[in-house]
Length: 270
Image (cartoon, rainbow, N blue to C red; front, side, top):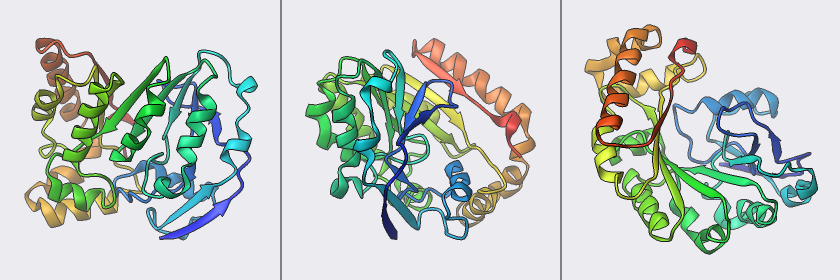
């Protein structure tokens, strides 16, 4: 892992995501090294074009200095972790995310954190001070063996669910982000049943197969689920499958009275 300390112009930028006004990314790159990650497109903007995603992290050591509370519109939704994980292992050393949260505490904004790490439990006391905050945990696959191959340095799926349960017990607003959905591998119904008592909402996102991650994803399928390789090779063009799955998810959530949001982008896959 190549770690470099840098000075950034800003850690907060305008969001292109439907659920956030602003995004805050304390790091460039991510130690979790998820093979399906779409965020490696960032490499061409950050002088890492020749490096493997997951092999480098730039630490924005001046992050706190770039946050001016007066310039952040009140009631904005600020998402931590759009193209990096704010609680990746290096956070335990640098505490950039924690410092940024402390700066946001009195900004009268709505803070949302998305992570795959149980390290967030370190900051429970700080999180409880926010009046408008929610924490999402990404879990796409329950099988810990497959997860370790897909997300080498992330907390195990079981640790993530336990983290959500602990956060909920502490009075923190939580949601489950079932993402990415791996067809015929992800156990959506089981995840819904396991988390029904300690998440306020479930969000769904399908696997986003793009030219930059397609080779890695297909290699994983070939090595671990070879009977599915033909299906996955055609998946990015299989709109009917995703439409059908979306209807199934909606029906199941309605039947179980689960608050949900679906972010499927299969029409943009390719």
